[in-house]
Image (cartoon, rainbow, N blue to C red; front, side, top):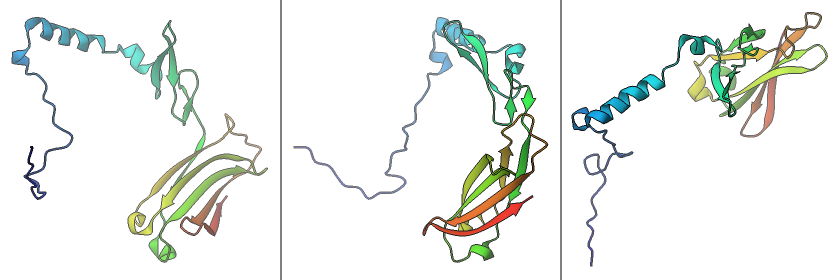
Length: 174
């Protein structure tokens, strides 16, 4: 028969989570193990050409021949992320007095051209208690590269009550 004793929970009686893992001390390593660690550090170092190959992107190796390709962030494009996308930068800060009775507000921001085509959009949730002093930085990208200068673009901001799924209001910025 195995007996267990119940102990009230406290900081002293609880075990740390996740369990701490200790790494072997260098003094305990054998000379050939230290040499392997030093060699593996050198294998992981990239030369300067590889670091700058993708400008602001991430260099990946694809396929069995490990051809170099770049993963570009949304505001850059090109085979080496060498071109900047044209974009609209918008910073929004909502004030609590406008939404004091509501708990959770969904905000949708869209970049629309004069034909009604949506070029890009962002969505975020505004909770007045948590986000009353938060500034939301939004980047909206044009679909065309470069943007079509014959079109007029506007930014639409729509607000919804996410609890009751009700439309609240809209703003349009030329």
